[in-house]
Length: 442
Ligand code: AMO
Image (cartoon, rainbow, N blue to C red):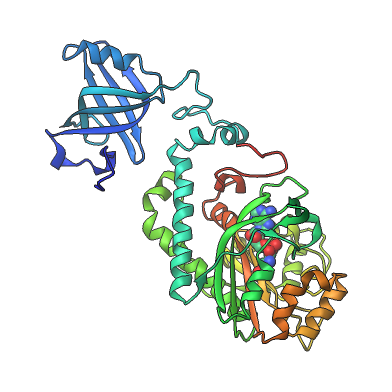
């Protein structure tokens, strides 16, 4: 136990404590009063402890416990006793109960009630919602996913960086920019570290990643769009083609799924989820082929159209039916579709096509990227085609004039990944305090 820890947590208590005194702390989940005996369920970060109170042993403690409102925070000091009836295999016979913080009644949200509250009520009372094991488990899995990602990228020689989130220009199209007032100038919240991660490719720090929030003023309310999401951004130089970039995305997924399988067993059990390791390499479905597959499902998508939510879902259905893979790349996106992406490299032999790819997981895009255009003259031409004012991109363009290696990378939506991994109905379930059109508090 670290020196700063003063309570013993439920998962630290074992047979070696039987007959000994200790102090536990947590929230009063429930109290069952059977007349002469009562059972107080004390929940801490790792489980539930049974505190058994006998009226004849101490009427004072018995009455005190009876009056503690549910979800109050208490410290209980007492003796650990082996118990066949208690779920954890032991109970605490208290000598002292300190009420540290009394909860008001009624509770804004039930913690052990079987009736599920709607997502809005849960999010409005997130601290309370997180007291539920299966909700807490989502964020424990998310943290372990990030550890798996960091371990993998670090071991592959990628350097973790941080780039500014207050920026002067967007890279992903003006419609989803959040303008902000920056002293006496106007600025934006960063939609993506795109320009900076490419800038770094000219620095010698040419294998980088960043895990940070990205901001999008998304016009519509959907189950997969939020205004602030955690973006894993990767960029690497001296690549031969988008295939080298895809291999990194694949490596991240394999390593992080493996990490979660090994290190989040208990959490996955609480969520009733099994995480399978897909076979690698993941299938590559060319965009053209994907359109045909989606049309075969009865959707009307013309070549050159975005697959959209419905198209992605339909493609996921086909991949599932054909038992191909839950994770697959859609490759060779047409230039017209990635037109807004002025930085995408087009095929030299077929400028209508790019090496750009998406990685989809169970019918939803989670990653998007590819090889960038690193040749200054071609890049500026593509920017002009997109009606961009080159002057506002001077810091970005300058790096291409003084030695820029071929490079590529991708943006990886962390919450969408966790959502799909855990089969959650809405991406907001994987965000502690989601931001969207209607949600700014808490
Ligand atoms: P893109 O805009 O496709 O690409 O975003 C990359 C990934 O980020 C996630 N994502 C979102 N997740 C939740 N809510 C949103 N509103 C949202 N928007 C995007 C998705 C998506 O696949 N600069 C490029 C990446 C690159 O080429 O490196 C970019 O931002 O999972």
